[in-house]
Each structure stands twice: as structure tokens, then as C-alpha cells.
Image (tube, one colour):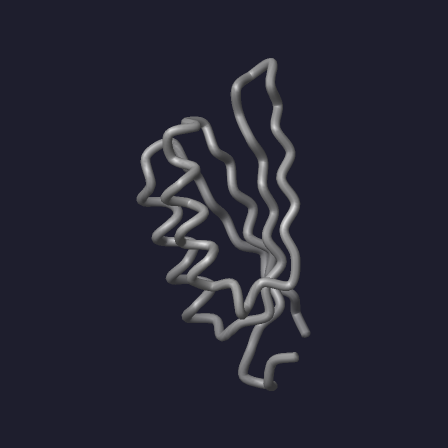
Length: 84
């Protein structure tokens, strides 16, 4: 359980290049202490994977992760924050 200084958020990730998965997983592993859960759905017909990552972390950690994910070729990321 995190402190009051943390935010609850979901990071939505779209992976369009399989070659990017290793780098993506390394970034997520670096934030593993903040990750509550993760769900990945491969869409084989389109060759795309959709990943959602639930986090309880300081806002700057979530923002930094989203920015780093977005700089990976073939990866897009957006964050939705809880209001509580």
C-alpha cells in the first residue's frame, strides 16, 4: 500500500512493433513496486498488443513512465488518473 502522496492510475499501452516489447518490459520492471496489476491482450489479426497497467505511485513516476514508453518506437501510452 502506498502513501497519501500517490495517485491511482491506469496506463493504456498500444504496442505496434513486437521488437519493442523487451524495452517496454524493462521499463515496467523498473516500476514494479508501484504496479498493482497488468493485463495484456494480443490482437493477432492486426499484429498489435493492448496492455493496461494499474499503478499506485507518485504522479511524477507515472508521468515519467508514460513519457519513456511513448519514446519507444512502435509504442503509444496514455494515462487515466483516479480522482481520489
